[in-house]
Image (cartoon, rainbow, N blue to C red; front, side, top):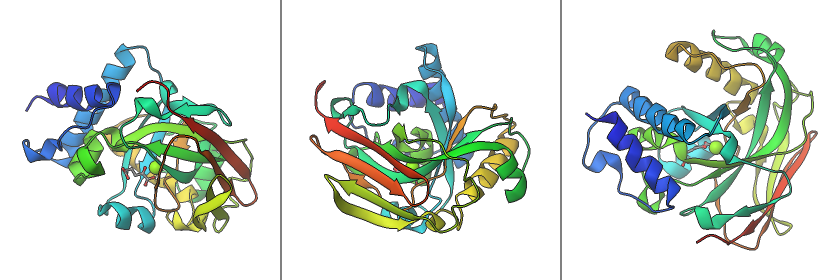
Amino acid sequence: MNFALLAERVDEAARHATAIEQLTLTESFSVDEAYRIQRASIERRSARGERVIGIKLGFTSRAKMVQMGVDSLIWGWLTDAMLEEDGAPVDLGRLIHPRVEPEVCFLTGRDISVPLTALEAARHLDGVAPAMEIIDSRYRNFRFTLEDVVADNCSSAGLVVGPWSCRVTGLRNAGVALRFDGREVQTGSTGAILGDPLRSVVQASRLLHRAGLTLPAGSLIMAGAATAAQPLRAGLHVQCMVSGIGQAEFTTTLINR
Ligand code: OOG
Ligand code: MG
């Protein structure tokens, strides 16, 4: 199988905001192979000058697993081109069928390369922030298998990170609200994320170790959505509130279609 060719398909779909058929309709590959396709797609981004700034976890909450019909924890890469400024407008014109999900984002203070306990994970962190991930499956109708979504860098398209706080251990049950124009569209708790989003860092450490990778100090870790994702449209003011640590926000516009 030609991993580079499959990576090119998902990468071009993202670059041109054009949906493609699921790769698994015509190819058969394992989850491990899907991660190799994902890796090759990130190498294409790096070749264009994008820089890896961290990783994201997916399907760390039941709400997301139920919404998408996938029940395994997955992970992908975040690059500097995906990072949107807190409070700034996000252009939906470069996206296919974007959705937003309320998350928390951790900032690492030390390299992570070996499996960590929750206590050790907390000591490897410099901060936590309310955050939102913008996901945009490159597959038609936002439908995929586990292998498809992994190959597609776990649908990641953007992230907005609010102000940093040092309360990395205080998030076992903090209220989460996603608001569109001031109206609540999703509500939940940070406890929905593996019981405590700190466990996403524990899981990340295991995954990195298994992949033989080191996540450098100063990296971001998106813990995964606390609620189902909500479809975006132009002209919205989008806000994510996390009790005790604050909020992140952005507006949506439609420019480059
Ligand atoms: C896959 C990404 C899942 C999360 O936070 O659970 C994810 C998708 O739903 O398209 O990012
Ligand atoms: Mg997510």
